[in-house]
Image (spheres, rainbow, N blue to C red):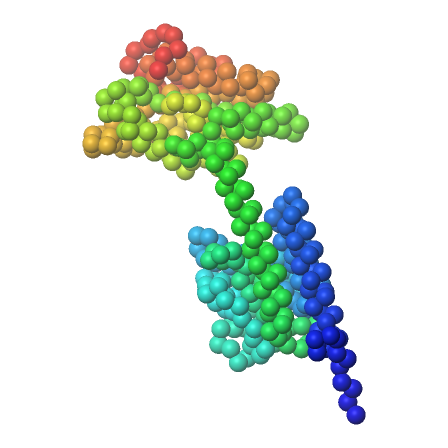
Length: 372
């Protein structure tokens, strides 16, 4: 006689009751993780750990979706081939994971041999045998951020609908965590970003220049600062109106952003003044950067709102730590003074702190004083 599974109240088997209780405990753990001030990566790691503990897959992964390309990237991978997969990208819509990401729907595939959406090239490449898959989208409302994919249960059984329900609920928690983190990041960006140019604002610049100077002191590394403004910008406003002036500042911000490295920090200092922090950069490199940006501004075609071609040039000052300054305020002052020496020599050029000659200046005649 075959033993029948013991039943709990409501007619459920003992095993299912145990799994149900474990699922409730898991969701409570995840809820606590979401309520904590942890970083998003820590929360996702905790969620993936709870999935592993509850559903016992032989291999599982979290793939995040690139918002621009739609590709999926293996971000968290737990399996015998984890190191080979982490960071690998899947083309948009490719395989089971790609299908789930594109359609925002869960898939339970008991036998992948019977499903044309399964892509077997990873199995062949990594000598791995995939038999069953449970894959659910990580989303909030209608936005899919990625997918969670489980492969083969440890008991070599198949995933069923109850597994899918638990996994979907957990994935929804992950979607909430990601959505909340992105909202917080968006608010932070709004606080530190200049609305007009898209660069950082002056408040954030002052925080970062302090930080970068202290870091340079600690690691005895070079740091440079480029300070520049637009020549005769007031004439643009007076002749073509403030809307054209705003349009010009927006375009200059885009040019600056396209010329800096990921580690650099560019900000609108105020009015038509801009600053660029160049970490790990000696003065010679900063002068090269400033000269390139100076030429690009000079050669770029700018137009007023009524279609008139504008002549736009800039005056650039360059200073470096510790060569020209011992603190952040001295570094800003040194770069600012170098810029005004360009102004005094006729505008439209690049000047190093501590030097007298103006490089590449389109000087039409020297003048004195801090002028625009």
